[in-house]
Amino acid sequence: MAVSGNALEHESTVLPVVPDTGSPHGGMTGISTAFGTFGELLQGVLPGPEGDFLVTLPIARWTVATFRVDSGSTTVRVVPEHKRKAARLLSMIIEEAPVPMGGVLTLDSALPEGKGLASSSADLVATARAAGNALGMPMPPRRIESYLRRIEPTDGVLYDGIVAYHHRQVRLRRMLGSLSPMTVVGIDEGGTVDTVAFNRIPKPFSAAERRAYERLLAHLTTAVRRDDLREVGAVATRSALMNQALRPKRTLEEMIAACTDIGGLGVVAAHSGTSLGILIDNADPERAAKLTRAVRVCSELAGNVTAYRTLSFGQAR
Image (cartoon, rainbow, N blue to C red; front, side, top):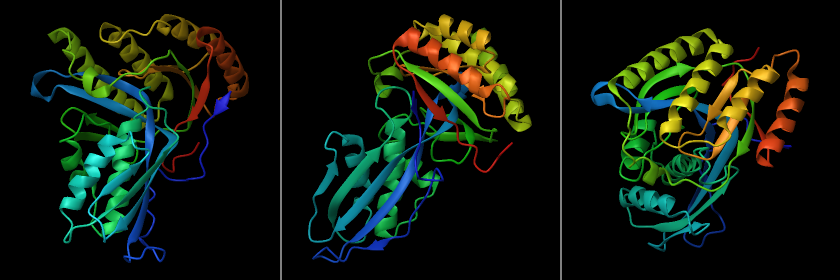
């Protein structure tokens, strides 16, 4: 079992701007991070113009971005080179700098790409924060959103805690709060999903289904406020089932059956990804036994298994 781990203690660590004494141009270096999310506790479409939304499940895996300014150049380079969205974002930010400049952005991520763990969103948010640090430009969430809105649909990883987020509009709907720690025993069904392409797919949900999503969001909002992990798991499972109309998961029924047999909280899905996970309460006195059984079942179903720790933002139990 591969267990998530990271030395970083906080999802939005913003380190101070560091003088880059090694640069002949007297550049600066900015470093920052952004966390990922294991799929979504809930994702669907609401009635009326508000439309598409999701609810995040932050996990203890991060992207770390380091931007080193080179004031003697106007060229931007990104490592690794395929992170083109981050390069585009960095160019937007530099265009607003008081003087022309370039630099090197390095992204180091523990989030796999194309699996539904918000790797792209984490890359972009960490990039904006690191560039802001290096250039002395404040990067509050709404400013970052104004950039990301021009690039792609985005998860709500700009905000501490669990949030309801209009990902296609790149706009916060509501801060829901935080939950006590859980473990997600996850599988990857294989392949990758392009988030931008997925969000172009028409949503075939009826008016009745949209009202059902509205009720689920209300239930989840109350459950998070009450720290009711069992109800959170029930909503996540229902959302995963409803998403079968858009991107079916071939092992979902087996994962739900395994979760019920194990006594887990519910099944959480990466609605636009390839991942599924069983939620287990970290305070459950039978946690160790449940984890062992969940790992065995997941390995038999998919041939792979990874455990993730959810972020609780100071909440403990």
